[in-house]
Amino acid sequence: MTSPRPTSQDITKLIVRVSMKDRAAFDLLYRRTSAKLFGVCLRVLNDRGEAEEALQDVYVKIWTKADRFAVSELSPISWLVAIARNHSIDRIRARRERTTAIDAALEVPDEKPDPEAEAVAGGERDRIHSCLQELEQDRAAAVRAAYLNGDSYAELAERFSVPLNTMRTWLRRSLMKLKECLER
Image 1 (cartoon, rainbow, N blue to C red):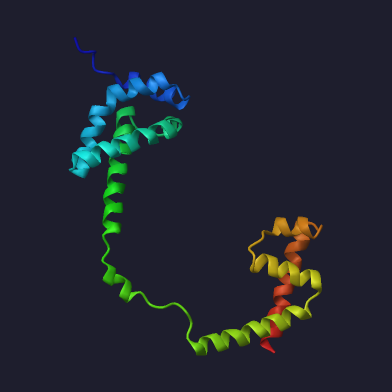
Image 2 (image 1 turned 180 degrees about the horizontal axis):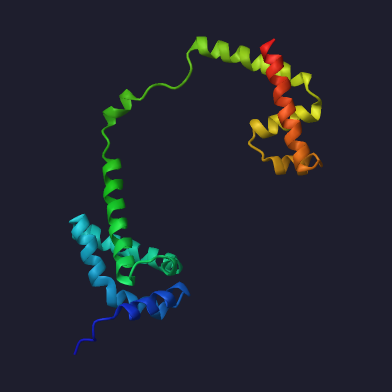
């Protein structure tokens, strides 16, 4: 005798238990929903072997993302189907990306600057370096850290032992001095 078809409430309870990493609930959820989700994968991928692989990936996602179900407004089966469908579509997209013709690489421009651009950039680099030397040493170090290394204002304020707003003022004033220097 077959077990009765699971209700939406049954599946919801299983997903909630799976979100708490309940392996028995995960096993039961798989047994009750895998046929439907396999059908979704097969319909999208149109290849039995790939659909089986996709189904495994789908259940890994369900295991890791079950806690997100509560915030979704979907019915439990719709949520599961959406995961299976989206994963299968992602597999198709990935397959297409892998099949890009090698000849397309011939059309990719060389982004390395030409000798003239390198000479101009070298001159600009020297001018910027010269202008940075006109700043106080700690201000120049803060500018380099913020704009070349990507350090945050908060990190710099802590490193230089100044309040955050002071660091912002240092950087703003230093940039204004650099601009004046570069415009000379």
